[in-house]
Image (cartoon, rainbow, N blue to C red):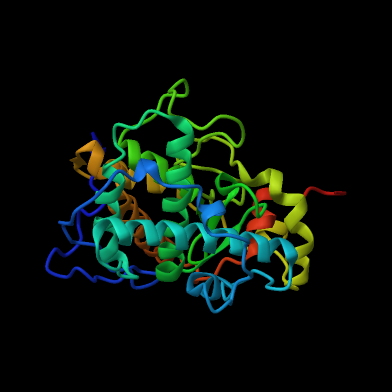
Length: 326
C-alpha cells in the first residue's frame, strides 16, 4: 500500500493552489470506447521528420520552446524539444482517436489518459510497453511543465533519456519511466521482463535535492542524468547564469533539516491508498504537486526565499559542490 498524497487538502476546492504555483487536481472518470493502446505505432516514425519547436503544426513544440532556462538556439535543445513535441502529438492523437473526443490541456485529462493506459495493463512485451510509455511520458511531462514550470533535457534521440527539471524546486524525474509504472500499475522488480533493456536504469521516482547541496533522492539511488552533464555544460554557460553561492562552496543559506529526508517523513505520515491509484498518472501528479506544496512551506518556515531553478542551477547540483583547487 502507498500513502495518499491528497491527505490534508480541501476536497471542496479541486483547484487548491500549490504553495509555489496553482496546480489544479484532476477529478474525472473516463467513459468512452477504447481499443488496445498496445498496438500503437512508433511515435517517432508516425510523426515524420522532427519539427523545430514553434512550427505551425506543433503547438506543444511551440510552447516548449518558451521553457525557462533552456537556450532555444542550441541544436541539442531544439532536437530535445522536437522529440518531446513529436511523441506528445502522436500520443495525443492516438488517445483522442480511441476515446472519440479531444483531450483537455489541463489536469482534468489525466483520468482519461489513465483509462487509456489501463487498456495495456496486461501487456508483457517490453518493447511495446516502452513505446507506449515514451508517448505517455512526453504527454505527462508537458502537462507538468505547463502547470508547474520546468525544463526538458535529453539527447534528442532516446525518449527514456528525457528528464524534466522543475522550476519551483530542485526536483526532477523521468516522465517515460513514471508513465511505464502507471501502465503496469505496480512496483517493478529489477528482473521483471517488462522493464526496458539497456541504459539508463529504470527510474520512476521523483528526485529531490538535499538541502546542503549534495544530490539526493527519496531512496538514495544516484541520478541517471549525470551522463548528459558534459553535453549541457556549454548550454548552461550560454544562459549566462552562475550557480548559487551555497553550491559554489561560498557563504550562503545556513544548514537546516535535509529537504529530501524531511519530505520522505511527511509523505510516510499520509494514509495508504491502493497501489494502482498511487501509480496512476493522476496519483503521480497529485503526489508531485503535494511535494511542491510541502517543500515550499518548509522553506518558508526555514526563512529561505522562493526561487526559480534554472538549467545552470541543476547543472551545478548534478556536478556536486565545488572543491578547493578544482
